[in-house]
Length: 389
Image 1: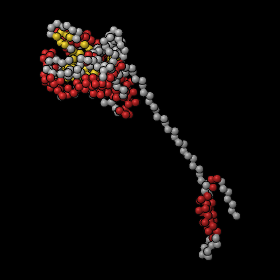
Image 2: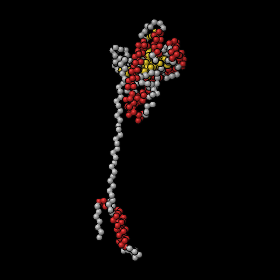
Image 3: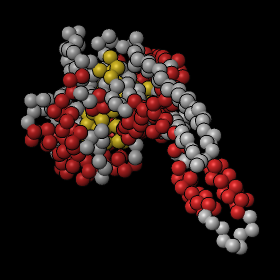
Image 4: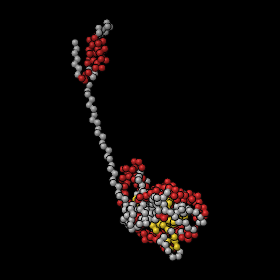
């Protein structure tokens, strides 16, 4: 009798054994008469069966390579907002763009305005040929000096849409820009006498805050519509009734009348939709700002001379200033773009260098932090926002 000892490894090969068993047994049967060599057949069958039962070499699994951990890049901390030392300490820069990635992309897009591009918004009420009698008036002589000084210092005038595009998306404008805003209704002669020359010589537009109280019966309407069609006087809203300031205590009806009524009037007679509300009397509040946004306005102008404006950088006050009690703090309104500052015409010449230096300092600060901001963008923003043009 042949005995087999099965190890565990042999047990795993039992299927092969049983497949060969019929062959082995058949070899043990009496050979038919015609088989010439039974001994050789038996030996061959036995050797084949035993060979099948020999333990096979155990395959040792190759060592699984440990994956190399992908290096995780830590974004650098972004710099703080640029602060202009030339401003009143209570007038601090407010940012208005919540999307950091979008802000950085617009800021460093080579097709957009360069960092440090600054806009000085100037407010005119009356340009007087004779003697000046009110604080909100300026003589013709002083007006001409203002205009020539701005031009000599490299400023260029823009219109309201250009300012909106710059503030919202950093669209390219002159690095030193001014927005010339004339409040209230005026005759066409007023604009022709004082501003047409600068349009024809330098291409400088002027903005008018139009009061809509008289509707189609306004004696100055048609001559101003004609100027609007020429394209260099840019008419924006200065309220409907105008002589009552808008505030948080105003009724809904009054706010809608001042904002929507003025917009409808300008749409009807000037064939344009105003995008800016020049707050009558400088009055505003959180509710007026909310109603203005709902009406479709994109910008709002106060009478507060906090400083110039830059992309995502609006100087405003969050608390009342005892030294300047007539200037309402803008912070509580919660919308920097709807409470933009304006320089009074009587203060312009004294602040031209201040505005220029703020722009220069802001440009230097941006270059100092450019590598950090671009690295942050590359780590955090680029996978979603793409490469900055």
